[in-house]
Image (cartoon, rainbow, N blue to C red; front, side):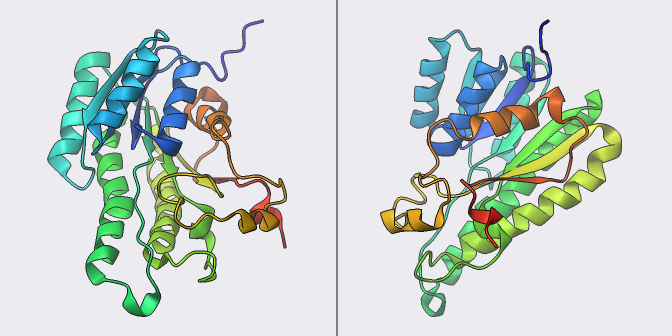
Length: 254
């Protein structure tokens, strides 16, 4: 018997920050499940590399340059996606940045920069996608939060006050947007990764952190795929406003 619960054939997904790291992994996972893919970020070269790679595997995929703090660039991605695929079924808000600094020296402009990308950008892209999802009375929005958004982080672990604050905002945004859209058949959930080696974490991720990870390892190149496919598929149609912690057991500890 064919299992269509996790089948994304004929679905169209936009993945912001899809040119590298967690975004690339998620784009690959959704493509493997059959989705048409649009990747976008400020790094068009990285998105083009993913585009070339997945095209060779037979995936329908497009790549665009997009600064998610600019509404006109977001709208361009939305319009081009509709033009190419006719609809938007899935949005993954993955684009994010961080800035490392002690609290007393934290530059105000860097605080605003992190908030503008991680919070405002997530809102603006969601708003633009929802306008299209409402037309079809269906859609899946997946926000990439972080376990750092659940609470504070000791300074010896990560001096990233703006990042942690922004990811806490993404968690609350996810829950509230889910309530606003539930009656329209649109589900909004989030994935909160633990320690995954990425460009953002490379400066702070230390091998000593493994002592706090029950699984005994950092997140790998495929550990987010299953969660992303689940939240993008019909398997999660009755799940909304939830945060999936993919962290090797960190948040399960008392």
